[in-house]
Length: 289
Image 1: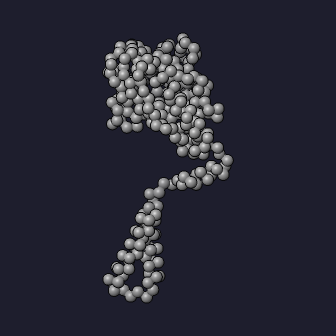
Image 2: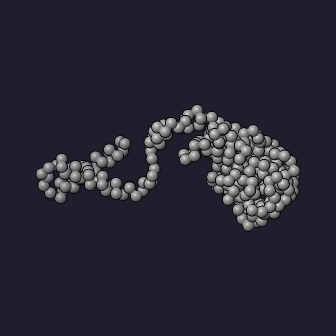
Image 3: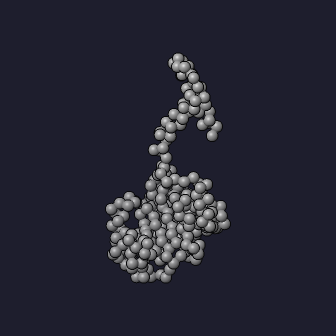
């Protein structure tokens, strides 16, 4: 780049001046310049090399490798554009801030959050069917950044969402209902991801991860923890002991929000993260999802 060229030229001229001032004879100026430049380049390389990330490849090299392998999921391809649009559609109809589009979900769908999850399809829909946040916040608005493809997982897409709304409806927490308070909810930026299977069905969703705890009015709380904090309900620390106790109790109650699905009701890839106690999914809900 031009800056680098200017810096190299400046270094060469400094080397020339230094040699002249020191009084050393210059039998071969061109050779001397070449040695000075070579020494400079070696010094810079020795300094910078430890800082370079190991195994990193230039973006254009990655695209060349993918193109050579015949991949159809290159950045800017029709597949990527379609799935980015589907991810945005799903986030607009994911069941938490708005009624769910069940037809977009794969049979082996799993939800994962910083505290809640993994939840299988039925436990996810049953839990959100209790909360019905969109009824408690009829004017809820979800603003999302354009979805972008994960650099390692071709079928996974990421966005940042901003959520605002006014508490003008009853909020169901499972044990109690919070009457309308008129309070305004403004959640900090939340990172969400949507992963598809080969049939373009949503097979995994992650959400509730606050990207900047200094932004918004709910601190480090996202998803349902943010909703509770926004309406003034005493909210346990996400991931704290009280939350674990409540999730343990909830696992044994029917028609009650679940923190995790039973290990035997999760896809094999997620079974190790499931619980070993409490109701199985088939016995946990009265309604059919």
